[in-house]
Image: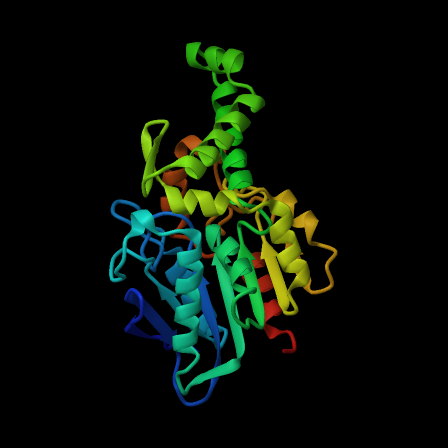
Length: 314
């Protein structure tokens, strides 16, 4: 099954959502996978100006080859989707995902009893929240299972600061002397606390304007709540985070690994875009790494795990 057809559509509603439906043919009803992307202004393929990874295009092609119909879409207020990106909250992102599924599953070549949401990074959070809103038969959580945004930012900031501390020179000396884990925790807490009292759609923090609604809604959620949502979910779950993922902590998978409906997989030396790393895996050069490794195939073990999960009896 090498023939992949891509059909661009616009889904109307509160805002218009630009999406791509990928499939091999329409000769029979096929299961559907919704791809939910991570944080930032990447397009439906996983790219932005000057930064191309095609991570979601690659995943979509893989799913079609597995026999699925796959849909991916532009976030609210970006590219072909209307609305205001800078004022959209987490709840808006969840609602938009639900709208895409409701539209696509109504097509005559979709098996509406076999619906899968596959979330990557922040998309893992959205896919988990989506289980409380609409019927999903399975979810796949890539690089972000069980982590709330507060924990993710703590993890990322701590990793970055540690890299600077390990370097030589005056900056490393200063950071070692001044910046402690408690300092990072206080900064992240302050970032979310300020959203609670902000009077405008965006607020200024540490040199940047942040989305008030998005920060507040993420700040209201905890790791334990995501774990409970997965525990309460009656469908099958596959959660994958690589040991070289600098955006999500793979040890969080331990929180759900014993659940009967959950399969976890921790591929060794695999990063956030599901590629095996071939360098020192530094935050300081991560964009260069992503650009280079995105030309390679998705990690074979990860691909196999996803395939085997999707082959399980419905």
